[in-house]
Length: 382
Ligand SMILES: *Cc1c(COP(=O)(O)O)cnc(C)c1O
Image (cartoon, rainbow, N blue to C red; front, side):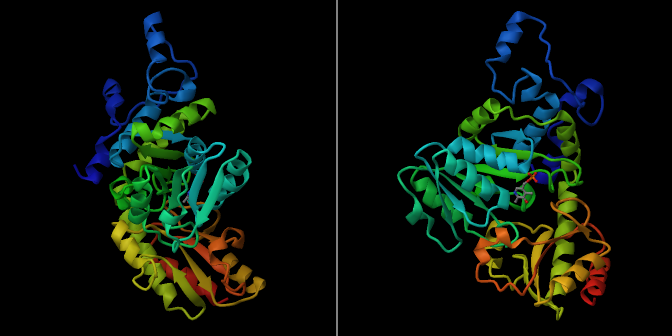
């Protein structure tokens, strides 16, 4: 069955009882059991998949997890409180004293900080690697996980996930990937060999800028340690959030092609502007990551970065403040366009970049691209 059909029909099993299209929103701290035997049985089922206690989810949570597992063509899915908490759960589950984790150096900033500050303090060694490093050479006997993100946050660099997976799998090491940018629609993570796929569902999966949510897909075997870690650390997602995300998910296959089309139109327009030094967007044939993008993705998303010609901070401020259609704020994946200055702290991969050029991250929403280009044009003229 095609993914657009699956997006519509999965995760609706409990809707039958109420004769509604959507599954009911079930809020609960206590789950009640009719008999002692059923109460006992609940503790034999898998946590976050079995009714037990509100913390481990209600039927609304399970509907979302089932839908996401089917959409990503994976065995199972665990929902967490945010995209960052999903990344943290995966990393923490595979970390431990004496263990070694390989992490691609362009990962989402807070993910990198978790590795540097928390995992290292707990006795795990972290090696950050770049797109040009040979991962096979960096694997140690104590390596427990390879963690990547494609494309890298903000710098938009591509990695070859297939090569990395085959190097890791040869040594029996699982690979986790932050797949937020591509979504299951454009990035078939498990088909590429990725074992644990992480999504900040806050972004496109919910798609309406109004919830925080993380989703992790993979096999039961690969997610076992993650599930245990989530259970022991009190991980929980509100059923309200799961209900909203299920509603957002239904239109993913309609929203994404429009984000792609609009982002490409705006990126191409920016490439021709005299005040723009470079546009970092692997969907552009001129981008150094274009071939790898084409090999691994079936489409492109709305966020990309561009560099302005050198300008003063005051000029930069004028440009950002003059934008009318681009909201100034963190995050992306909603229906609306956003702008954000790129904080150089996270840009270790671009150490050689001159300070004079200023990096801007855009998220291209569902507006008409002509209006977006016109807005950028008037702001760049300031
Ligand atoms: C936003 C984002 C996250 C974090 O998700 P939150 O839900 O905001 O915690 C993780 N990875 C990537 C690539 C992101 O863009």
